[in-house]
Image (cartoon, rainbow, N blue to C red):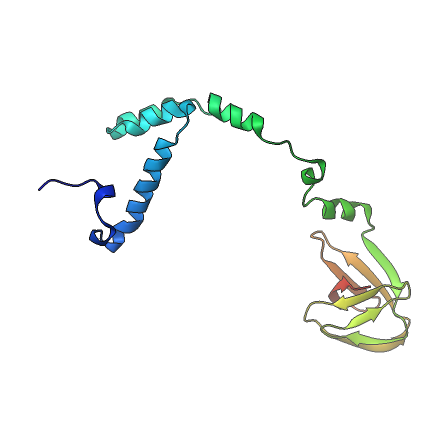
Length: 172
């Protein structure tokens, strides 16, 4: 019985387990047909049937040397815009220019906090507790607090005279 090429078989004749392999082979065949002339060394190696020879061929291809087609594609790529150069870095730069902590007092009588509590400071800032922490403190007027940023950028509120702290986020 003569074996048919894999691409000539109808999909219904292929076992379900062989379907991903068939798709991969069909895709690699179309990639070979669309290869640029600069990829001749890769095409030569792919055509070899002896495994040891094929590996030796791949190993002989210089690494980091761009083919003429690859160099042309890289030269035609647009240069990055100035704003895109710093994408994702603006928050770090802003943090570097900000102080690492702020000291103030809580407006009015302060008895502690719970999850989601909003705490208004005398400097006009409003902070919300964003972790599940809670603390019951001795009631006091104008409690002194310190809002501090840790090494990872997380902001915590610490109350003077207490070892309790809460993870907070500024809302106003």
